[in-house]
Each structure stands twice: as C-alpha cells, then as structure tokens.
Image (cartoon, rainbow, N blue to C red; front, side):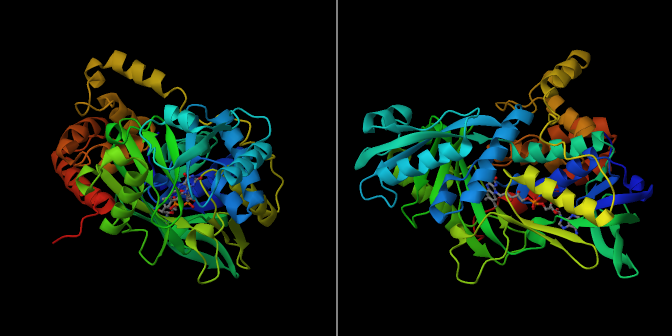
Length: 494
Ligand SMILES: Cc1cc2nc3c(=O)[nH]c(=O)nc-3n(C[C@H](O)[C@H](O)[C@H](O)COP(=O)(O)OP(=O)(O)OC[C@H]3O[C@@H](n4cnc5c(N)ncnc54)[C@H](O)[C@@H]3O)c2cc1C
C-alpha cells in the first residue's frame, strides 16, 4: 500500500475529507463503502493527532451517567458492541474494578444504581454484566489497592483498543473500497467556484509538490485544529510497581474526577487530566503539573507503588475536540457528543465526538454528504463488514518465513520484531520513524528514551523497504529525536 501524492489530482472526487484522525478515517471508509469517490488527506500521519493519545478505551462512559447524558451512553454501548463484532482483533473486553472508600463522592448504592443502568442500556451483548464486590472480593481482584477505609466496590466490563491501529484500519478499509489516501499532505486553502467550495490546495510534506484536489463535497474533520478542547494527559509507569491485575476506576483525591489505571503490557497507564487549554494541538505535551496530578492519584489508590517522577517511562497529552460549551463549564462535564455543521458554501464540518462513537458519527456525516451531493448511494455498511488487520500475524509469519533475519527483535526486551517495522512500511503507510515507533508499534511509549537510542536499527529496516539513501536515513533519525522530544517531554528545562 504505497503513498502516492500524484493520485490526488487523478479525478474529480465526490468527497474530499480533510483530517485523518479516527473521525476523518471513519468518514472516508463509510463514504467509500457506499460507492462514492473519496480522497482523504492528513497533514501528518494517520491518527497522529488526538487519535493516538486517547485512553484507548471503547467504552460506554459510565461517568457520563453522572451528568445525565443517557443518549450518549446508549449510543456508546451500542457502538462498543458493534466494534467488538467488526474488529475483534482490535477491540478486547477489559475488566474494571471500582473500589469504594468511606466518604466517597459516589457511595456504593449510587455506583450500583449507575452500573445497573449501564447494563440495562447495553442490553444483551458480548460483555459480562457488573458484579457488586465485598471488601475481600475487591482485594482479590486488585491486591495492590489501599485497604484502609475500603468499604467494597464493583467490577464491570468495557473494552480496550489500539487507537492508532483503529484509525489506520479505517483508512486501509477506505482504500480497499477505492479511496485515495495520502498522509503528510496538508490542506492549505479551500478553492471555490460560484459561492461553493469545490476542492482544496494540498501541500506535500515529503516533497516539493502541491496539488489542486477537486471535490464535489469537502468534509472538515480536523478535530482540535478546528475546535476548542480540553487537554488530557497520561503517564506510563512500570506495572510491577502498581501491581494492577486489570483496569481500575478511581476518583481522584485531588479534584474528585473519575480516572483510570489501565494495563498496557508491562506498563500501567494512568490517565487522564481534563483541563481547558489554549495550547496548539501541534505542540501539546504533558507538563510536570500533569504528571504530579496523575502520580498522586495513583499513589493514593496504590500506596505501595510510591511512584515519583523518575518512575515515569513516558508522559503524553492530547486535546479532546469538544462541541461548544458555555464559559465556566467544568471540563469533565462537557458533553462528548458531536456536532455536524453544513455551511452555505457546502463544507461539512464535524466536531466533538469520541473514539467509541466514531462509526455512528461517520454514518451521520455521510448521510449529510449524500444529501448535499443529491445522489443515490448504497446504504451505510460499516457495521456489517470486518475492519482489516485481523490477518497481520499471518502476514508477519509469511514475511519471516521468506526473510528469516526479519524475525529478530527490533529492540531487545520488547515484543516487536523487524518484520513489524517492515510491514508498517510495506502495508501500513508508515513513512517516518515516528509512524513506525509511535503508532504502528508502541515502542516509543514503552521505553524511557522513547526508542531514540535504537532509532538507527529501526531506520535500517525502513531504509531497506523504502529505498532510503544514507542522507535520508540520517535525516529521518534526527527528525525522530525531535519528534520524541515534542511528544513526550514533560520536565521543565532548568
Ligand atoms: C486524553 C484523551 C483520552 C481520550 N480517551 C478516549 C477513550 O478512551 N475513548 C474514547 O472513545 N475517546 C477518547 N478520547 C476522545 C478521542 O480520542 C477523540 O474524540 C478522537 O480521537 C478525535 O479524533 P479526530 O479525528 O476528531 O481528531 P484528531 O485525531 O486530532 O484528527 C484530526 C486530524 O486532522 C489533521 N489535520 C489538521 N489540520 C489539517 C490540515 N490543514 N490538512 C490536513 N490534515 C489536517 C491532523 O493532522 C489530525 O490527524 C480521548 C481524548 C483525549 C484527549
């Protein structure tokens, strides 16, 4: 699956999607499956914005019940079920334990009532229903939790995913249905004739080219680049220090917000913060204050962990694109619903939403596209066809059988082989080291140096596949150092 900038000028598209996060990728897939001619561009990599910085949960959003957002929870649990069905390789059931302490903002009876409602809204599905737990049952589930003042709790199920791969799978599916998809291609201006937008000028970030892309309908899905949002940060710490068996739902002792500790292989991922920000999505990163907030919440629940800043393997942040809210609103209570705007000039802008509901949101956007185009199209089929990627392990084995040297670990101690990097470049449109190390694998999240010291080994595999000369290889390595610093720095320089 090769990137081809020139194909953007190959025809008049029915729809040009700007932004290849989960929102744009879902729209491109839906539109292509309905038989429309689709182009999608992203100024960076697929999922390189917020869609690779989420908590990686496909969840109903139990905490939204507190704010009375029943409609959003109903839609989310329905979509959770759909994604478990169409992407079993990407969406896996995950057990959460919610411990309750004496004097908690959400006492046991309220938690129980919430979880009964959560199960009822989900109906009969693939996930187990919740259980109320005694103190000893909570501690059997999660022995590392603080025992003092523990009065019981509950266990319930949601699902985990790989946000970057979910985004990529939607782009791959769109391409399989005929879409043209080009990453590292920025929309720099829209073009117009007779008061209607009829395409965009797109600039190539990997070459000197510019393209005039013609589209009967333009959809803007640039997430936090087009809407105000709240910042959310995560940290990854060694899991053996926290000792969590599965996921744990916590109420932060600092500000009473619901947050999570989530298992991520050998790491425990703690998140998130939720604060208004004016920072640019291009430069957003976690700060020492974000990290301290997450550490003190985790230490309160897991007192033996005794985590400090030096235990943080990586810290990162993203911006939640939110539909508008009145000034002064508590960030955590702003709805994660989405808003679709169809402008007089024909541009369709979608803002807000969440990873979990991307598919239904895309369906609604493409219904609008079809209306704008005044065409007949096939009905939405995205809930009925498997997302691609389920055969990746088979592809890997095939590649390693043909080229045994690709079976070696790319970085000692991590579960990624050189074939993972090679496949990223051949099948998954990875064109930079960050594509391979941050989003096609999670190497960057798992090492305190984010893989910088191993960048040359990864570059050697990519150079082989993509035909980089020495100069290009060296510049890709230098570029990765800057990218790792941009994404993962949190310490203030002294
Ligand atoms: C900390 C955090 C945790 C979250 N956890 C969850 C969770 O667990 N579950 C859940 O359901 N949701 C979660 N969310 C919400 C979810 O991640 C977002 O709603 C979703 O990823 C937004 O996707 P998007 O495509 O709208 O935006 P983005 O992923 O940011 O995509 C926008 C894209 O537009 C591109 N772009 C911008 N300008 C241009 C241009 N001029 N030309 C071309 N391309 C352009 C950018 O490069 C970017 O890739 C979380 C959000 C945050 C911040």
